[in-house]
Image (cartoon, rainbow, N blue to C red; front, side, top):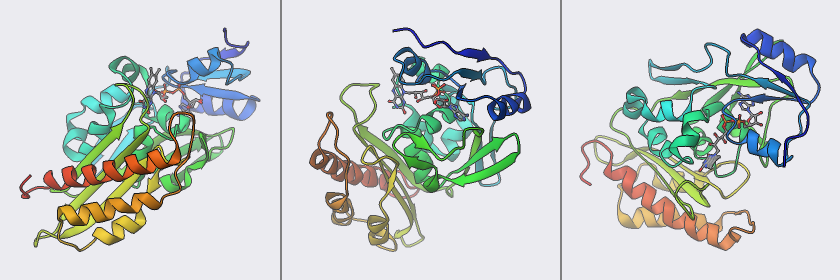
Length: 290
Ligand SMILES: Cc1cc2nc3c(=O)[nH]c(=O)nc-3n(C[C@H](O)[C@H](O)[C@H](O)COP(=O)(O)OP(=O)(O)OC[C@H]3O[C@@H](n4cnc5c(N)ncnc54)[C@H](O)[C@@H]3O)c2cc1C
């Protein structure tokens, strides 16, 4: 199939793009096109106007400074994956990016596009939730921040008004010495995961768990933080039995169901992946033997 007719706009300033978004009815922004172009071709999306963000300067910065990471919405996934600064400060993101599609899709795909496409299994959305990211949004009338927990409104629906776009995200970095692991199960390399799990652990001086973050992707419309499992782990001395017990919280989650996988299967996958992610994250904490 061919896309339905649309008008193409090619602004070279952010203000111009935001003015177009405010003025035009039924407009969509185009980032890397890796999800939007197939959606246009299949007529799942039929915008009257396409606003291409690719010529706008200054939307793709990557800055690691003062305990924080800021990534512009148009930063390409491959560039983020290859960033030595991100690998050192935020290894969870680097590991997850290696599982996003293929090198070819990551060469074009952007972090902003992945967040806004908001596939339930998108690795970058799960990572953003695990790291308590803040999404920076702009419109012709100003800017606002959205906490990642409030970003998904429903299935593949970000809480953005028609005249708004994402311009970047900020992530508070975990201290040096933390361990992180992103793992997933997909049917083939490069496919969206059926279920994914992200774990971050920080040990204290006694080798107990001083801080923990556990997040699942692919089980619900948005990423699922496992608050009960996190509470079970906090302050405890890690052991295989503790990690198994925390992972068993996944047996009770309200997992979604689709033709790819029934809910019981997602719960089973989640239980296994969370245990593995915890073990691997702990093995990667500084000063703790693998
Ligand atoms: C073969 C293949 C395999 C893939 N596998 C995976 C995978 O395993 N995991 C995964 O996560 N993704 C996967 N993807 C999707 C890929 O990661 C896309 O890059 C991503 O979903 C969209 O990013 P994009 O920059 O290409 O956005 P686009 O396709 O340009 O846009 C996607 C949507 O987001 C909106 N949008 C984009 N940028 C903004 C913005 N700044 N503000 C507001 N709205 C915006 C667009 O209007 C559109 O609705 C795959 C894609 C392909 C083709």
